[in-house]
Length: 304
Length: 320
Image 1 (cartoon, rainbow over the protein chains, first blue to last red):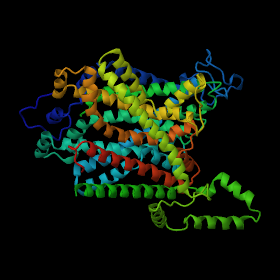
Image 2 (tube, each protein chain N blue to C red):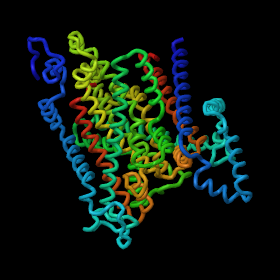
Image 3 (cartoon, one colour):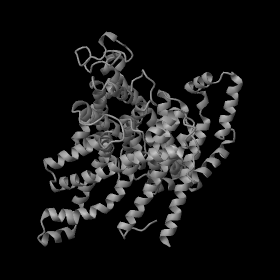
Image 4 (cartoon, chains in turn purple, red):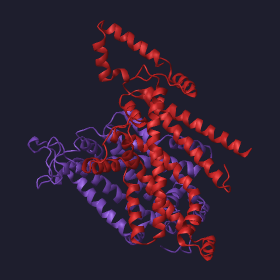
């Protein structure tokens, strides 16, 4: 963190801006290093982070590292238990469960990140406008947000998918649409509290334009809470995707999802419990790991 | 007349929200490509039924639209629906044209409410003692173990817990049925699955609330009087934690009500959640709107009740 120089800060130059540096608690490499040191203290969060990284690696590399493609059927090897060739066994069509779970993780990640990006983009935009400009715009958008909150999220999701048809694309659009209101409320609140800070007033006195104030002074300060919100939004998106697939309104089979693996496994539960156990266990562990990381991030960035 | 203005304000907010929910649902369904009559099974059924060819089919379609007021502009449809809904009349559904929806709702919502209320009781009956034990044995293996398990219970979604219970208690141990409805033993696993997260939430809340209260002066006074630790916790610390617990239970109720949609699927329970899902799958719009409305109304009413209850229990709280 640099100390403000005695000469007047040059606001127009983005690279040298002591005011912004003083305002930003989170920016820069030094900030990242400090955050990592604090994050590291929470052992569970570190374990969770490494678990998530492993899941991400397996998911993204699935086309190359998965032992089989998720659609590859081997009728001769149907409904087998664990073996060297099929670590998690096979389903009723002889498809490798490990591969299908890896692709499930991949789909869950694509859907949840896509949903978070859409929800955050819409929510941050709406929240930033209404928080920064206030007035009638603020009142109007907050009414819309209230209505979104009154509508139970999961029900709206089901209705949206019933309307748009199921599939990978509609999944993350629908989850994004149903989740923007939370981000809008968060960003608006953060902006309202950041707006009243002295350094924003100082920048305004020095003649900084609105866009500059938002980018340089307000955004860096709301990054922390947004990171925390995203770290909880991603597993929520995964949960929504699996829940929708569980009730047959998510991804289209044969595309695997934790949800439809579980609902398919339920059919074979008596003879072949591995078909429902492995998807449930891997899904549960992934959600748990996200929660650990989210809690760790909240300890660093969260404001009560 | 403070309470009166509170009620009129809250009730009108609930009314406005429900109207918004109905309107949004109607507009979404209106925007949807395809409708009930264009669905594969319906088409096939109609084709096999009528021998007079396309003319009769057209006739049927016109009658269908008239019957459900689908030929009117959408805002008129919404108006008609809301007017009937005010007297708890929802007309027939697409898939079950001979039974009015309100009759189905009464039966199905009763089923769902039973599971949710049993889950709620479990949350209190199991969660509170667990929280007290964890607080009594603060920073011991008991505390860490209970809090670890409750963390898992909070994170793992109810349908995965439901699956785990079925595999454990039905498949491996053979104690309880995997699905079915009507008998006592059918209630146990669904209620436990739906109540797992609330149990964990209540336990964690009670623990932290008791530990916080233990810092208070009146607790030191109670100790100074020579009361045993167990009695101090139960009679002094726990009693003060039970009032804020009411505010914890409100969100838990809506959480369980929405979770029932999935848990009912796993256990194949014929409740409101199952009805909602099948309505969405079959594009049965009257049923879809109505079940959405009932869910939303139940959640909002419970939130109102929780606020009132809190103000009644704690005179320091003012209704706003």
